[in-house]
Image (tube, rainbow, N blue to C red):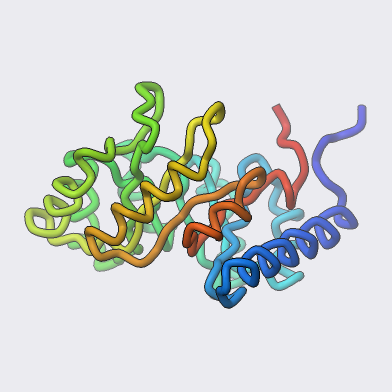
Amino acid sequence: MKSDQPTQMDVPERLALVRQEIALAAEAAAREPDSVSLVAVTKTVAAPVIAEAIALGQHCFGENRVQEAVSKWPALKERHPDIELHLIGPLQSNKVREAVGLFDVIETVDRPKLARALAEEMTRSGRRPRLFVQVNTGEEPQKAGVIPGEAEAFIALCRETFGLTVDGLMCIPPLEEEPAMHFALLANIAERVGVKALSMGMSGDFARAISFGATHVRIGTAIFGPRDA
């Protein structure tokens, strides 16, 4: 049976095309291409394929699950200490110690219990990953993230009560809705709370996200092909 895992020949072509599309989208938005960080999403992608992307100069990656990341990233980061690893999936409070120890950016801060746990672990360990607050711009009940109307108060709580630095915001627009309104909403909240980083846009809509100010785009399928089931 043929595997859906991309071959080493696939990744260079896909990655080059994505980089080109990011540069073109940035140019169209009158922005510098290097103002947009490509977060290559490696959910279900095997370590040898990730190593191929690293060899091609990709140094920013995203993982959805702490346990999967723990199984493959410590060795990769030991060999490549300049890697920046983002957690882009929901974080359970009981995984905070592992997450703080491994990830450089945690994009999914979304509730007081998690903020408290992160503050305590960062104080204990002395390690301080950058933190983004996830905003559930579509107010979808099945999706993680603070709802837009509560975002400012939650960010103030993170800063004032827990002493956390919030560096950015993240969102995942509803699949069935035009993403532009969600990107615009996230950018508006970011301006109000004084954060610069905006993680928004995935394989199907990252060019649109860049036009609304995305500083990080999370792209997996367009680089690594369809995920294994």
